[in-house]
Length: 284
Image 1: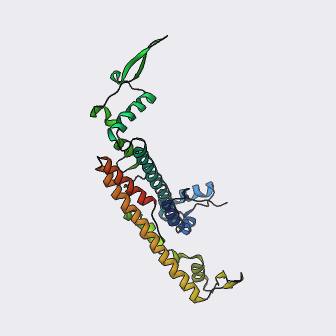
Image 2 (image 1 turned 180 degrees about the vertical axis):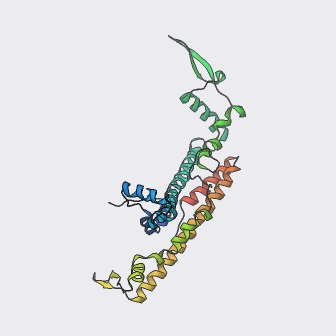
C-alpha cells in the first residue's frame, strides 16, 4: 500500500495541472519523510528524543523528518485551498454578472432578503406582516435598501471568505507569497539531482543503465548523450514549472489587492478576469 502526504487536486483546469505537476516533483521528498514506524517504534523514538542521550534515529526524527512532514502537509493543504478559493470566487463572480447583471445594490438587497428568509433574524424591523392565516398574522422579510442594513450582505462581504483577511484559517487568495514556498521551489528546480538512478550510482559506484523503448518497441540502454539530453530537458521543464508556479502566486496577490479596493461592477469584472487568467495559466 502506498501512503502519501501530497494529495492530487481533482480538477481538469490548467491551474490544477500546474499545481499537481509541482507536487509530483516533490514525490521523492515525500517518500523520504513518510513515517514507516509502528506505534511502538514511534513511541520509543519519542522517548529517546527527550532523553539525556537521544539516539541518532531519534534526533533525525525531531530535527529533520517531523518538520518536513508537517511542511509537506501544509503545502498540500495550501495548494488545494488556493485552487478551491480561486474557483469558488470565479463561480460567485460569474453568478453575480449572470444573475444580477452586475448590479451591486440589487445583489445586496436580494441577498439580504434571501439570507434572512432562510436563517431568520432577531431584529423586529426585518419583518413585516403579510396577511393572516388560522394561526394569526403571517410575516415576510421587510424590504430595506439603506446602506447600513445591507452592510453584511454585499458582494464584497460574501467574497471575503476567499481572500486574505478572512476570519477562517487556511490558504486564501493572497495569504502567501512566492518566497513562502521557496524551499519547495528550489527542490523542484533541482529535482534531477535527486534522480534515484543518479543517487544509487553515487552510493554504489556502479554504472546502472537506464533503458527506454526504441522505435521498434525494444528496450535499449540509453547512451550517456541521451541521458544528458533528457536531464537538460527535465531541468528546463522544472525551471519553467517553478516560474509559472511563482507567477500564479504573484498574480494571486495582485488579485487580492484588487479585491481589497473593489467598489464598482467594473472593479469586480476586472477581478474576475484576473482570477480566470490564473485558473487558465498555460505552462511548458
